Amino acid sequence: MDYEYYLQGMPEFETERLKLRRLAMSDAEDVYSFCSNPNVSDPMTWETNNSIDMTNDFLRMVTEGYEKGESGERAIEWKETGQVIGVAAFIGWSNVHQSAELGYFLSEDYWGRGIVTEALQELIYYGFDELDLNRIDGRCDTDNFGSQKVMKKLGMTYEGTLRKNEWIKGEFRDTQVYSILGSEYGV
Image 1 (tube, helix red, strand yellow):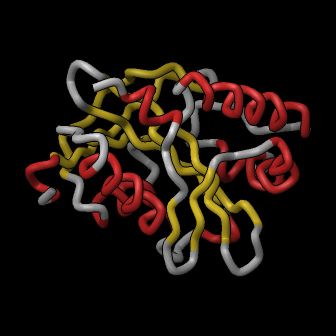
Image 2 (cartoon, rainbow, N blue to C red; image 1 turned 30 degrees about the horizontal axis):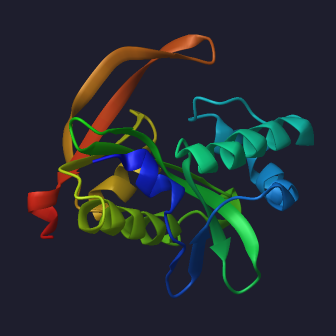
């Protein structure tokens, strides 16, 4: 399976409250509004966006990657307002092992409403149903309790902690790994 091909043509998804679509350069103000918040960026591998130029660089990289099948990012758009409030993504995948990793970040204004769970359920379904993945995993810092709750709500199993496995923002951090298999998901 060539996941890059499928990422090029990955459709939009719609839920009761959300639309998941490709990011666009016109989303810069919305994305900057939450990527410039240290509470959103601190648990992430990327730096707090201290200028709109940083956000534009991110959006440029993602939008250029769509055509090559290198970008699995989807804007999380709040349908009620049309505002982009976060990003949900396949951030890594293996054609050989039929696996993918999920990632996300969300505006602090929308934390605690089940939005990420709602968005990632769409990607998980697509991953197992359309991409025929064997495994989908997610990772987070050991102190990112919100992400741990999201992965458990998605039916993912805690597999273990990778100790001091990533150098992020001046320190080595531990990473918790969660996963769900296609056979567990039921597709």
